Length: 220
Picture 1 (cartoon, helix red, strand yellow):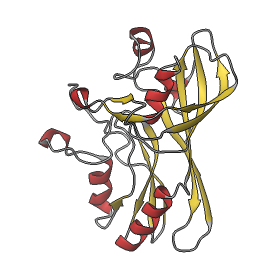
Picture 2 (picture 1 turned 180 degrees about the horizontal axis):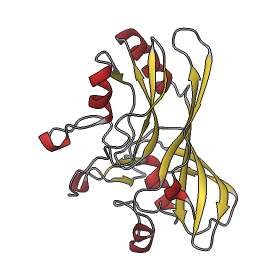
Picture 3 (picture 1 turned 30 degrees about the vertical axis):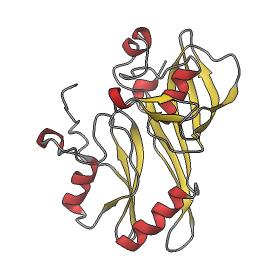
Picture 4 (picture 1 turned 90 degrees about the vertical axis):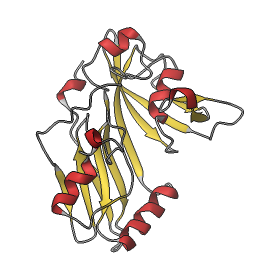
């Protein structure tokens, strides 16, 4: 178990706010919600609630993943936003630097996932009892040993993108759970970033689109 050392700067990065919702930029290394252990109380949610006590968690990113997170500012908006995510009406785009160079310029991964219970929180591919999990990917650029991919998850299973990339032979660099030793050592953090979100505003129905700049650590 790694020691939890969440980044302090920036303490809170707000991309957008109105009377209904907040869009935050979560840094890698910060939990989305507090853990049970006292040492894991610091999180994006607890930081937000210091200034916006009414804020409610709608969805999460893994601790090691950076990027965009939406929070609701009322129970009613929380219900509406949660419904958008459940009905796959939120377009999510991730960027990942992976080990190696995929032969194709794009592809799809359709592999069912389930918790690897003895090794939780790890997930695994299981064709008998796994839940349907589908990811589209596109190659943006490649260097000698790695590639920058655009990942478009259709479903939203835990660790989906991380397991799917490992399953096709291109684990995400810096992944402490799924990368091989070379891919793990190739980056100081998990190089997975929630770079864009699009959805209809739960109250006005206006189409909203948010982006988050790719961190410098993703450079080849």
